[in-house]
Image 1 (cartoon, rainbow, N blue to C red):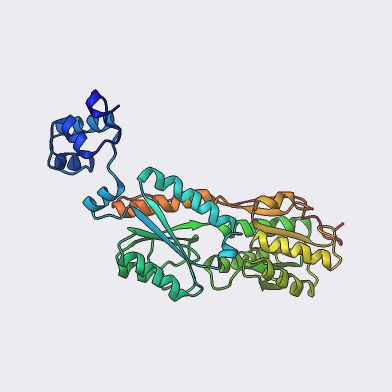
Image 2: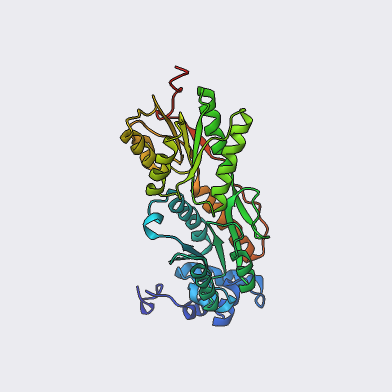
Length: 347
């Protein structure tokens, strides 16, 4: 229907809401953006008019009125090819979106060239252009300069990383990935393994260092020497190269800091004539969709990146709005499948 026929306009505007409610356009803006200046009775009448016309203020209009961008940012200095293979990243974005959808905010994602300076310049540009109200920090590194940078830029920030790490005063959602590594070592030690090697990710990242420390702690807890380890940099190529190095030390089991590295390691073990798990047991981390469909299926640590993303978004939106929330991040759990068994000597 059109206005001449007495029904709601095809494309209602703020002027239509004001006319139906019998107020000015300024009063509509005040009422629907929860600003003082109108009585509660008038505010309710305006809301009913807007509901009748199915009208909502645009994000652009709300941003102009509130000096808000209604957007949050995430800048990553990663190779896009590796990013596409990271199941945590996809799940994290899904969790973030479940929260942002309810707040009428959007995520501005930038994947920039390698290097910390490219990442920092991405945040500077977003802040300079007033495109975001706050930002997430992923892949937090040792001596990371980004927390201080975001404070300098006046942006609310939330870090995501190992529980209990140092984020230079930035609020964070702690991921208890060390628990998953300890569970993997506990499982292998319980099967009788004593020579358990480890393939870590990228040493510069806090979550990589956290998983390496958890492996060492778990080995000590079982009275075992922290055997050989090598960096696989969270890539298939790196995982394969690290596995070749470790096999020279003849471990009976290898714990990997990611499924992608574990899958590559399984191929290397087969090339070396080893049977998995009869000769060598392997565990991964992430529970990639393909992990359950390998031959044998991969024993791995399952995270809930969707829940982590939602918790991070809840915390960031609360900081932007001046609210207080306590983020809750679930613990990972070990999923035992066919890639682990007792070592040959124990059998």
